[in-house]
Amino acid sequence: MKIIDFHYHPVSPVFDFLPQPMGLLKKRNPVWAKRFAGIPTASDILSFLDEEEIDYVVLLAERIPTVTGIVSNEFLTSLCKGEPRLIPFCSINPALDIHMDVMLEKLVKQGFKGLKLWPSYQHFYPNQQNLYPLYASAQRLGIPILYHIGTSVFEGTKLKYCDPIYLDEVAVDFPKLNIVMAHAGRGFWYNKAFTMASLHKNIFLEISGLPPSKLLEYFPRLGKIGSKIIFGSDYPDVTSIKKNVEYIKTLPLDPFVIEGILGLNANQLLKVF
Picture 1 (cartoon, one colour):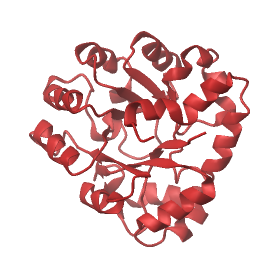
Picture 2 (cartoon, one colour):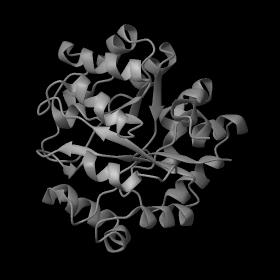
Picture 3 (cartoon, helix red, strand yellow):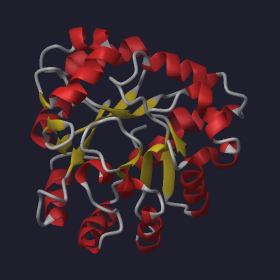
Picture 4 (cartoon, helix red, strand yellow):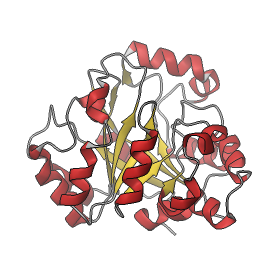
């Protein structure tokens, strides 16, 4: 069974992260804070993945200077170059960037395999018309967009922007664009997120930030859309990726559904094995 972690933040205490989120991460995961105290290298992350028994990982750039901080696209390009197990997703900020469609094309040519957007951190509604050229570009390029769809404890977050309903219009208008909801509606919107993934063939639920022990409580009919569920850890916001994987393997679901959650479903979007 191949394991893909669809949600990993390659941050470290030396990055330009704001004090509040960095303080929370250090408190939640002091082992991470010591291990990745310097700028992480590909070797550092690959060694960690080997220990956690993870085959591939999606690494997220972060361009959010007002809420969390910066992990630049340039850094991620350098980090992942020549390492097929490290899958880079770029960051574009609608409040800061213009000609976002052109920017995305350039980033994909540099090797990025997807795009991460944070509506509640970057303060935009996903169905805003000014984003449509960006979506058209992503659809044409065949890359998925990962949206932060869930609550957050970070200062500056505005939750109204990440209600799953705003992705309904995007899914209809861009039927070949693969849309992944990170955190699967965490907090207010589990039912909405599940319904959206049930209705739209191009919407997927990514379960980072959710305790595996609560998955069937949040989504009692999870097995009905097993092909739409994608594993993500949100590391370093968890202490052990491996323990989460092992717990998911014990869930009372069809083995093929579990295999899909842990790797096959993500591979349908990423084509890494």
